[in-house]
Image 1 (spheres, rainbow, N blue to C red):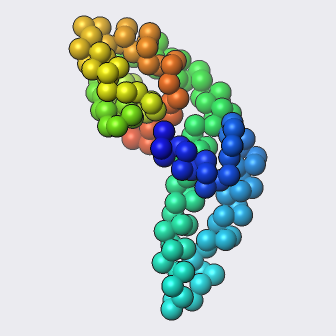
Image 2: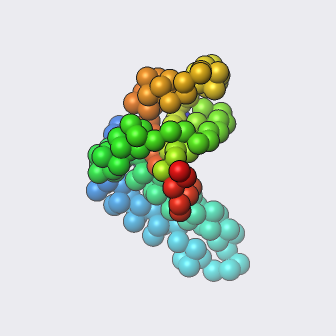
Image 3: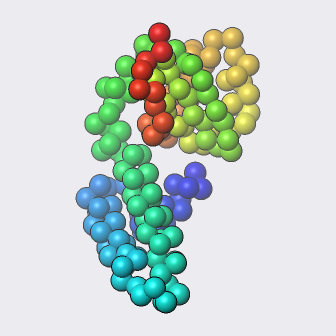
Length: 151
């Protein structure tokens, strides 16, 4: 959640993410922080390199959780959570990453440690996740996914 709030603040987003306005702000920030604007001796060049990467990472991240992106990928997500089993999972802070048998991975934001403990101690993890995780938390498809599905 901290990462989401930081990127929303960087892109000056108060409410829901709109892809059109996000793209305009991205272009503005890229122009502002492009490292080629600064000479090698300029102390702002190092900051521009860092900010340039942060702007690019933030843009791609916010696009991945935008309602329009989620809607476009909803059929694929529904198929995955309904038909696939869980191969692996990782929890760090409030982020739960689940890898499915079709090779796809999804990150769920805001999953606290108490819910995670209930999830890992459940005798039917897929059923538990369907009830308490899949539709309850903000999610995005993770960049990491297997090239081959696991049978």
